[in-house]
Image 1 (tube, one colour):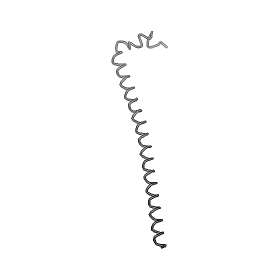
Image 2 (tube, one colour):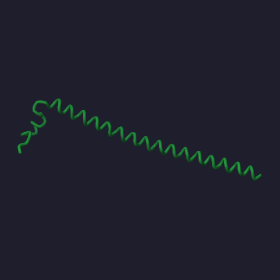
Image 3 (spheres, one colour):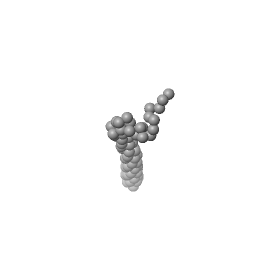
Image 4 (cartoon, one colour):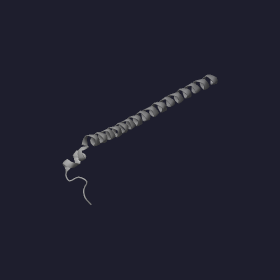
Length: 77
């Protein structure tokens, strides 16, 4: 089996098509990196949103309990 390139210089030159090949590789890597960063950011935003919703629901439950306790105390009097 023969190697495709005889040297590192030949590898980086890509048979005269280095500009197009490395541009395509850079575009692909940058796109994937951007997608990964966006996914991580979205994941963090989603977790923060879930925490905010849970905290809001907890506050609503606490307010309802307090309101219910106040009503039952008024009925007892």
